Amino acid sequence: MGVERVAFRRHIFPEAYRSTSTSNSFRLRYLKVFLFIGFVVSLIAIGLHEAGLWARFDAALARVFSQTTPAVSRRAFQYPFFIAFAFGIAWTTIDISGRLLKCVVAATALIQVVAATFILHLFGIFFSPWACVTTITLSFLAGFAYSQTPNGSRKRVVQEIFGDRVSSETFKRLVDSDQPLIFEGEVCEASVVVCEIFNHEELSGILPVTEYVALHNAFLRNASDFLVGRGAYLDESGGESLRVIFGSPLSDPQHACTASAAAVALTKRLDEVNEECFKVWKQMFDFRIGVNSGDLVVAAYGSRRLGNFSVAGEPVEFARRLCAANTIYGSRILVGCGTFNLAEPAIEVRPMELIQRYQDDRSREEVYELLALRNTMPVEEIERRDMFWKGIVYYRQQMWDEALSYFYSARLSHGGDGPVEFYIRRIEQLRQGLASLDWSSARL
Image (cartoon, rainbow, N blue to C red; front, side):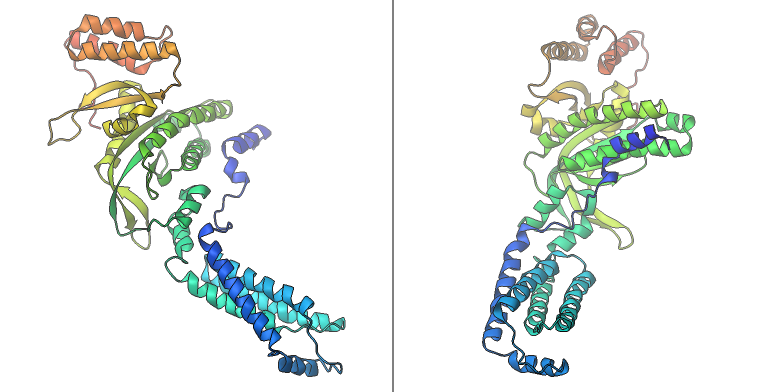
């Protein structure tokens, strides 16, 4: 791989060159428990030390060392060590997720104390190990017992279930939150974002397999890292698409606004990645995004062999259909009516189609193209959007001339506005009595 491609990989795969582990940081939830255990164990050790309990054991140890002078353990020498062990072992035992690793750390600390006792003796220094052994043992037992409780095991459960599917910030909030983790299943309102590549057949026919995979991984890694960084849960990531959830596992009343803002920002990020891909492979991926909000069934699905926390329900499938429908209209982001209703004050949209969402329900609902966040569009773009909107109104009234007038006014001089071109073409087809491709005929 040449220098150019190494630089490319560092640019579009930044996470591959730095650690993203969420298991090394200590959580606020455990801070009080860690301090409490360390403080109590230290008091116990100090009390036993001041009561002279270790004197008989120190004398026995002195005889083992064939030491003729009295075995005296000084406070200034002993206290810093066993107090540090009291808090340190409590900290590691509570914070480390793996049971075996907890035991290894405690056992290593005990071995170090014993080894230090013999090494210091070689230099003529008597070190009493009993207080340190006591604090290590008591802190480990107390920390281990707490880590088996629902509160104490929360970090381990979050790590096992969610892992790198959430950001480090979301991981912290999940561990510190008092919101119960329900894996048996519950219904919650959330937003689904689906992002997919639609020119994979073309790419597979042009690129060698390794480069085809590298380009797809550029898309998947950047899209997933970006959305997870925005607070999403990475629900699914395959060869051509990914799906994330906003509003679960942590509830978020603003999930629709957050999902919409993330979708708009994602297009800009993936455009940047596409530019880098073109420099390397002279090819780009054609991505589209669908956003939908509604009541989802969230639970731990699957078996012991293959299972994970996920979501189910019609809103999930509808998000996928919205994503695919972009290819009909030439749009990049389509949002469902549920998302629009929840996020309307924060987003700029234009109507795309009145569709029959459910086969057994003849009522129709609007599908919208998400353009930008509120108060971020240039004046000329707002004027074009309003022209398009008026064109849609006349189109639905079958006033073709008036509709075309507004669509032509909304048309870009150089083209490139997919939905405008779609409706101009559709009106021409309807006038000629030809069937036009729409939501229902595409069988999404």
